[in-house]
Image (tube, rainbow, N blue to C red):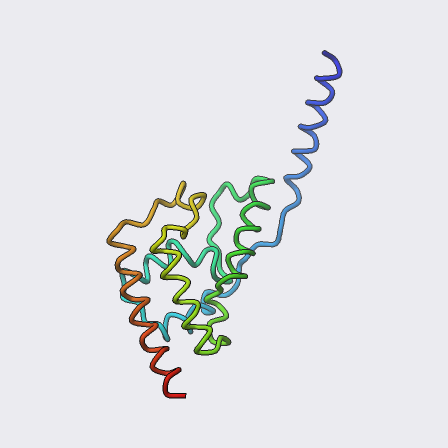
Amino acid sequence: MKIVKKILVALLVVFLVMQFFGPDKNQGDIASIDAFIAETNPPSQVHEILKNNCFDCHSDVTKYPWYNNITPVNYWMADHVRHGKGDFNVSEWASYSVKKKDHKIEELIEEVEERHMPLPSYTWTHGELSDEDIKAVVTWGNQVRAQYRSQIASE
């Protein structure tokens, strides 16, 4: 029984020490999203959906919940943000070609329609998108894609 107690104490000490270390936070400038918003011009409903469900993981600006201060949760969240930004980062929108923008919006539509995004782990605390929300995002996305396809065709 003494060995179990020593192991538990050691694990507690390791857990407490871990709280003093954490990954870098994704806290860039909110203005980095402006180019995406200006170019894609989402209606207010879609803008709110994007702000509340997408930008935390798919931009250089993340609003962190209180539980992000707990290690190892903060590492898990940092990994999600890193992967999200790797797939689609609205903060880099101005640097994307028109073809890449079209493809990214196509992927966004597909992921939202198939309910792959936002991730289930995100919706546990933020809520899921309603059917109306999904329809609004898809309608907006298709309008944006039509503009990009028109630009691609004229090149």
